[in-house]
Length: 263
Image 1 (cartoon, one colour):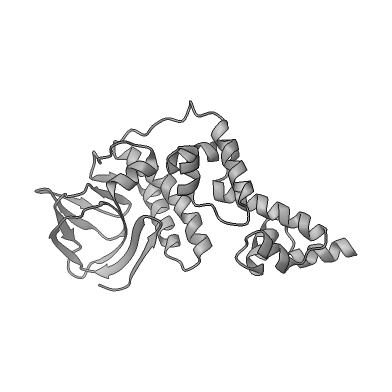
Image 2: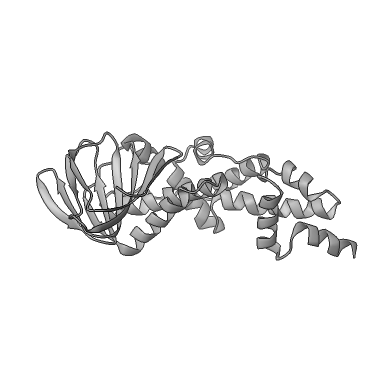
């Protein structure tokens, strides 16, 4: 097996594998397993049946299912994998019970998006990793839906929870509020929270908090605070993190912004 990257993202175990001719003996997992095939063709043996999963395929395994297979000798294979307990995935998606109805979903665009999030979450930047966790939960909702599982609706939720979420984010702007904590405070699953929040604001909770943090940074800079003071007081990782978000939002660095004000 050549390069294997592996990490934890919250409660999700994720990995990316690039190899040639790798095969797995028949085995099982305690967790749900979701795989995305990017390059190569995987021959899958699952509960006494066989099928092929080519590029753009998403494979789904329920806990305890006997599986095996792999790529032929000499054949290149590139895939990403995700492991999560069935209870955790069900809770994150607002379900009381979860079982995949389909083992193979050929969804090239969804597969690419899911793989991109897993690959992005394998980076060392903790802030980027946290952002990818939100994206991952949303995409897993789509994956589970195409597998045949019906997800709970959001029509009865209304605007109340989003407003309360914004109040919580604003009150703790100097620190990152984990999605788990935000959902628990509002009595919502992570997926449900993300869905209604994005529907109403066009942003994820983390993105919304960052735009508010950046907006408040502008006000503090205007009143004479230094960039380093602003970064510290508003919970930016460091001054360069403030610079990056400030410039993305306003097209100018904090230092240049203050220079313009003085001029």
